[in-house]
Image (cartoon, rainbow, N blue to C red; front, side, top):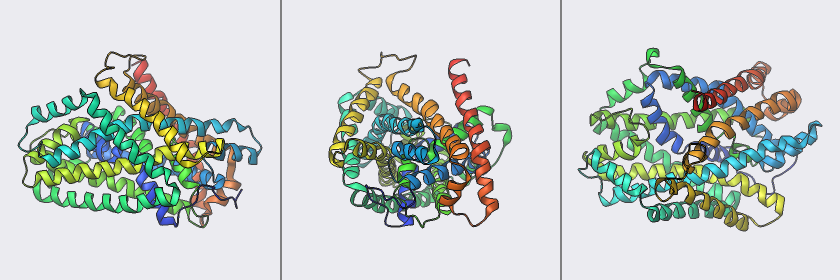
Length: 455
């Protein structure tokens, strides 16, 4: 299997893979979710716990996914099937890959809806809707958006067309070409917004909130949230990193590459927090405003600051770019599988699959208006998709990847793919993948389910 090449193409270089994997990881989770969950859970102590979880759970599992992908050179489903054949075990391990690509499709359906909100905010910011507005006015803007299914469908459709169009062009002309433009643009906008936060906001208060560690403010629930977010933010368990790994050059170091990706992903999350919280504190707003931090609280800050219209537009444009780079990694694994399984063209596969995602997305956005009375096990359709993927499918997939890599694939193949110079470092990674990471993921998995259904 070592000499196999992907039929879909390959990244031009190790750095292209780094940009692509970072693009997959850096999305709404970093710029939208991380700041508000840090705000809700005490700031610095939560950030420290998050970094520990990235190191002990995120990086080892990410390395496992990349090495499996590069070994198999196919979609996650076929990679795991052929790996199982190579080591002489049941082909049922391919179900891990199938679960991952299914989770990716489900996530993309509601992720596209949220990304549509962001595109709408790009337009609102450009039009000056936020200028001089207060919390109640911005809250009304957001509630009116959610209540209008036609506008939501418009933005959801536009986002899916852009994502499907990128993926349809293939690994080199689509994914790689897009990533080469999107990621530098995202980093440049993020740094520009950081400079704006330093000059226009209360940077000292934002820095203190992010990095002053008070373990008294850290609850057990916050630890679980940090661990779960560390897993989610690196795009683990959904096939994205595995399929990106299948396009990775053979000579590239998996360990060094994954550390770079995880470092960039974490850096973006921290800089996003440092760009957001100074503006929040500078306007005497609530850092623990929850999901509304980006869509209600920040527009108020931008609307009442010098240059706020321009920088509000740039901020939401940056978030839209991050969402785009992540969304293409959600569609790619299932497109790769359908092309391999049914021998159809990439464009046809993209049209069919993005159409299916679009329909699911319409159902998800209906949760806020025409389908607000729909109930599935106590969830609306949007929350059902979110809960099923984040709390069941992704952690279960990550847990099984650890078990398969550490206990079935074993040392010989993993050592060959990782090709680490230090035996101590390899043995440490192997121990973590076998014991620490699966136990940590299992704890989050069980605790979240217990909290939901028995708490």
